[in-house]
Structure formats: structure tokens, C-alpha cells
Length: 153
Image (cartoon, rainbow, N blue to C red):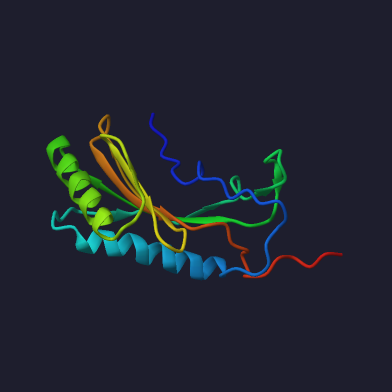
């Protein structure tokens, strides 16, 4: 079984919780826009299925231990498409070129390409050969759900 938890690896550790951020809703919208920009720019057209939105807090910690949760979340938007290996490799190659042209810092391997936008949103494409599926998704930096940290009492 293959679990795709991309973005949770990217730590949002900070010494103190930051001030205001975009809201969780705005983060979902921006994440979806980043993913759509890639999907729409790639010539290889695939039959994408949007997965349920996901948010998680595991990477949004403070302190050196990495276990002091701040109350912030990261949003994730993901699409999947059934593909053959040859299709997946073409898509990955095209995405590498696209992101390099956009000057995104790109990390890649043969079956995973990920990058960060200037505003720290992560975008990725991963091929899962065991199930012949391509995953195209993105995640936000850590944000406060309401855009503001909880008030200190």
C-alpha cells in the first residue's frame, strides 16, 4: 500500500507562533490555483479526479522538539489520474521543464517531482507504479484557520 503524504515532510517549525496568515479557506483556494496552473500548462491531457481536500497540523509545530502544535494547519489539494508508465514519465518530464522555466526550486527523482512557489506553496507530481496512478497536488505553508492566532488567555 502506498501512502502519498507529500508536504507533511516539509516542516513549518518556528520558535514562536507567527502573527496573522491567510485563512484556511484562502489557503485552499491558493493551493488549488497553484495545482491548476500546472495541470493547465502541461500539454499531456489526463483524466484527473479531484480527491477530497485535506488539512493537517503535524508539520506546524513550535519549539525544538517539533511536538508543540501551534494550532496552524497546512491545506492540501490533490488530483489523481490513471496512467501507463510511459505517460507518467512524459508528464513528469514536462512538469520538470515547466517548473524550471518558472524558476521554481525543483526536487526530483524518477517518479516524483516537487517544487515550491515564491510564496512557499508546495506543488508535486508523483507516479505510483504499483497502481499506475499519477498524483498532482499541492500544499500550503502553515496557516491559522481563521487567519489569526488564538488569543492568549
